[in-house]
Picture 1 (cartoon, rainbow, N blue to C red):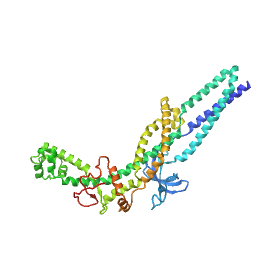
Picture 2 (spheres, helix red, strand yellow; picture 1 turned 45 degrees about the horizontal axis):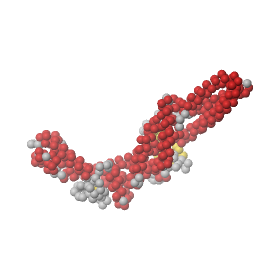
Picture 3 (cartoon, rainbow, N blue to C red; picture 1 turned 90 degrees about the horizontal axis):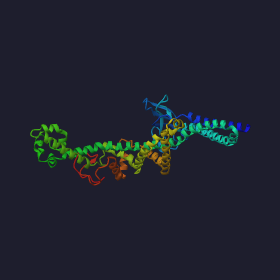
Picture 4 (cartoon, rainbow, N blue to C red; picture 1 turned 90 degrees about the vertical axis):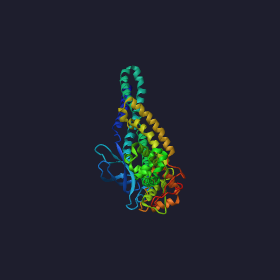
Length: 448
């Protein structure tokens, strides 16, 4: 009898430890909603302890606070290499985006340490508790056979309740979800940085290209429209009304063309449609050629913007595309795996949500293993660093022009990629002029 009581007490101790483990998991706070921001590092210690300045994205004011920077990031992002004059560095971080601490800095590394301690404590409690429970059940089976079955059945019912709760929480993998979130952030960041660099090239290229297109259209006589609009294009009437080029047709507009004597609305519609088709052809055919002998501010802006992509290397576009594809794969998996980010959320989730979360976590493990094998995280961080070096800040863009002289082909290849698919291939430009030359004049464009 005493032996039976001993095993019953042992069982209760085991169940109590398991329950305490579950309580520790439930008490572990969830990750808050975060928003990634850029940090200006004012000073930094070798171990990563630093003082940073950032713009609060919610109150739109600058703030300063101590922070744990990434000590292993590239030396190019650390002071004074990133900003030579003020001697500041750069890092990215997170701020809390909801609740009373909204806008405050949040350190994943420091918070992970506290969370890991609670997780380790919970794991220890559940391991010891399950061991005691198994010993009590095995040792107490003899007492149950001697007539203590009812008491043991009650204890077993309590055990079933604990096991049921454990089964509901089974599949929680906060570490996997956290690593997947970090990989997703790195992938999103490199895709965003590359998109900004490409947009800077397009912004600098657009006015130069538009000037070339306008100049070409100004040289195409209105008689050219007869081939497209037909004999009823009323070309002579248009010339009499002062409309002599395709550019004049587009500038005049359909309504005013119809008001020219003997032209009429139907002919104006045909002429305008023909002019737009020619404009589209010219837009696709004309190309910007960069002239190093007579640089002007707009051409300098284009070369400076291109230098960022050239310095980043030929593989940066592929890395950015890989980041975008990986982000598209991770987003739905992270959405399904959200309950698995903590035991508390798994206990609250429904049966179908828990099932989806476990499957998503399994896929995330495979994806993380693939990313580790291919070195995606390292490649994403390095590409972001290369794209964040920034263009030549000098007003004349001297270093960019020197670099362009050394390898113009790379600049033209990247320009062709940046302005979008469907641009004419090398050596197939119909007309154009060099960026940086004054006065539009017809000339062969040569090659990229």
